[in-house]
Figure (tube, rainbow over the protein chains, first blue to last red):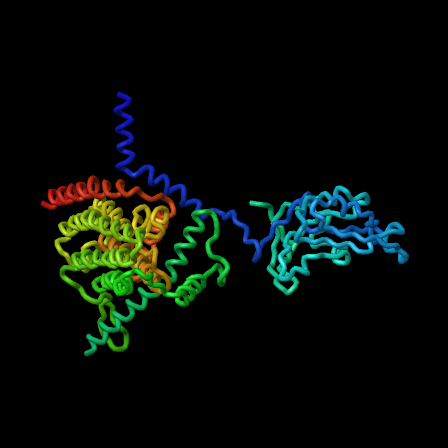
Length: 189
Length: 329
């Protein structure tokens, strides 16, 4: 009896296209729902959390002195040997001690962003930052030196991250950058 | 003389409109697809990607027109045109509205090219011709996928054309005329055929989906198993002609559906809109429904397609004729 009922129900379901209409009823609300995509280079940009490992940055202390003491530990810790440190004597008072990194270079083409250099650093001078748009038009450009890395990155260090901000695509001969406008923020989804 | 000029003018206008139809329709299709899949669709070319169809058109125009070495070159070249002409010819007898009078010269103009007394037969017959282009294209490509696509097209057309035409007979029996103009006029004032022929409409809709090769019946260009089916070997503008055919066929199917079942340009009288606007709104709605189903359902298997056509739709359409006959008597 119940078997018969069930097969009758299935038959009626087929006759009145119940399943098909249910399918259509699922896709219709999605048509008008908010999209989950990120209009990344043109309009929006994802700001990563603090733990993100992007482009390296060399920190300074509060007085504006370089924290790097040229100890070469990062160079030794690096699994791909992409960091070159040449220490030098500091006579100008740029650093926190008499010894500073005379040259500090990183080859981004070989770097795998493992963060071991960051762990090895005794003075917390080296930190992997949150910049991740590293595409460029020349190989030379991918070797970043100390002067550039000492500049603070676009995203403030104490900013928590994990939000979407308004952004704008900028392409120049240096490479491709998506400039973030930190004033307009929204939560993810 | 003026009459002849008017007819030529109408033909030119309709052809121009039909040729430019794929531009908004591809855009609409991609937007509908995007939003159903919770993304945005084209966004980068122009504001909200509105220029995307033009970019696609330019791309297609400048691509190389490849004819495969072992293809039957003449058939291969002529196939897209063969499939394109019938779908345009359908619109010769489609009434877009009733008469209107041009101001200043006081000339009455009809909103159709010709009012044939066998309009509905003409539409069904000519729309069915379009499949020759598909079959020829599949045959001439000398590729197994294209050939399979062409073969499927012919079999699918035969099985669904029957049910489609039979479902129209119900309407002809109710209206007592084969002319599309009479059919529309008889539905004036909310006496739409959908209320009298619901079963016929369902059969017509399903048959129409199969006729214009939309998902869930797009087995002739089944990406999953046939690459692209009958147009696998086509590129450049010849491919664009096939796409044009597909979109114009979609519009013509919506137009016929609106004419036969939804009262043509007849709209609710409490909203004062010109008839042509109602007509376009209804057609756009059905085009949207076609797209909506496309991105909702998966594709039928080939044997399922055949069994639906022969075992369900055809008997149902005969039953529909029978019931209609009994009621009319």
